[in-house]
Amino acid sequence: MAKTITAPTTEKIAVAFGSWSAPARRKTMSTDDLRMHHRFKLGPAWRWLIAKSAAARGDVQTYVRYGPEFWQVFDHLRGAPFVSRTQDRVDHLLDVQATERIFCDPMMRLQVEARLLARLPPDAVAAACGVATQIVLDYCDVFFDILDNLEAKTWLAVHIFDPKDRPVSDLHAFVCHASYRGGPMVCEYWLAAIPHLDEECDLSTARGREIKRMQLALMLRRIEREAPKRLFEVGKRTGYLSRRQARRFSSLSDLMGKRSAQVLGKFLSAEKVALPFVQSENDSHINVGGKQQSA
Image 1: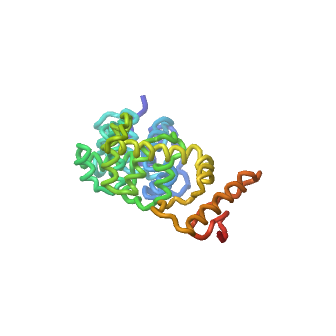
Image 2 (image 1 turned 90 degrees about the horizontal axis):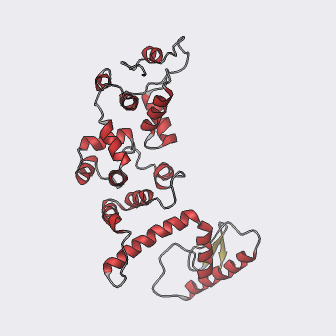
Image 3 (image 1 turned 90 degrees about the vertical axis):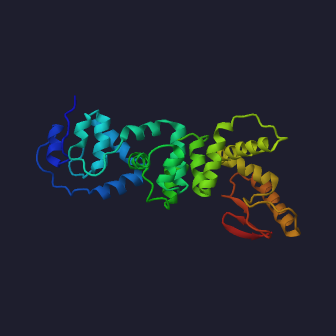
């Protein structure tokens, strides 16, 4: 059984794992630097991931100031007695078990994370999810460290909305993205609809049409991620490549723009090397490979 670490000091940590030799002449990494580095690289669950890796190795870096939250997660993963997690662990004592239960429950995890991404305050999230506010805060410390990083859109996209290690049909990423973009109302709309997404759709009813619209929205995201080239081909064939909503009427310039897109679509289909993209940008021009051409 691994030895219990009773204080997060450099010497005691190293001695506990039998790796102490001589003090290393290496600049100490602060808790803030550790958080900035690992959160950027690993995503919101960075603290859980590095604690899990350290517990599996039975080793920690002696020049890093990990912080009290890390040590509590580390002790939890090592199965250390509860009393040992109260010694020399300042500030609040995390309820790591409760946060892990949320993380391992797909629906509960989605409810908490989507609402946080919709910018609801932690107490409102806790009330909606039926848990204590402190549990939501603890969950952020352990698994979802985003509260002060909600404007980092690219970082959120890489680690939450469009992660490489998730399947293209991932409902969690879709609902989180919709909640982030649409706010609390959109978030609650999707969370309430999830249990009904597999229902048969009676298109003669408003309810059936609404479910079908949601199913099609999920299907569109899947196609965009699975086969973006196929989506481009469909756009070429229909002659309408813009993401804007279609008008209720067709003007002459609109028809000319569509016709130009159709002609270019046929031309590109016959070429061995297609241009990067063709997009109908406005009523009178076509955007070809980033250059505007007159219609």
